[in-house]
Image (tube, rainbow, N blue to C red; front, side, top):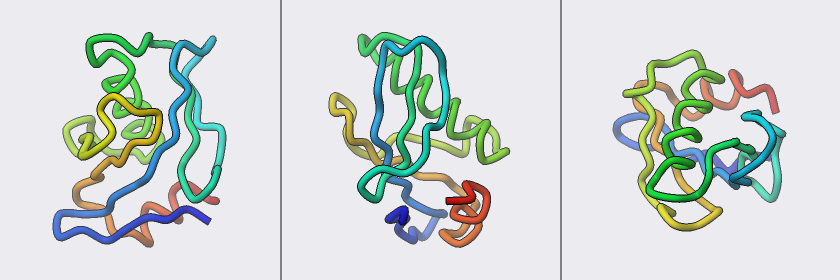
Length: 95
């Protein structure tokens, strides 16, 4: 089960990232985190931007509502999704 944390601005979503993949996609849940793959290379923040865009699109929110709060250079990241509760994020992801 996804380990989504409540936050005063919304919800913190843990994400496990595979960069340099063949395409951008949400692959499911892995170890309590949302597992995603992005085609962008892990250089100069390109993969981080792609991850935020993919999560925003998946949740149906604007890109400005999703921001990286930790894990800038790690495969394991935490994203803040502003304006959505933990329960709403969980239901939108359907895991």
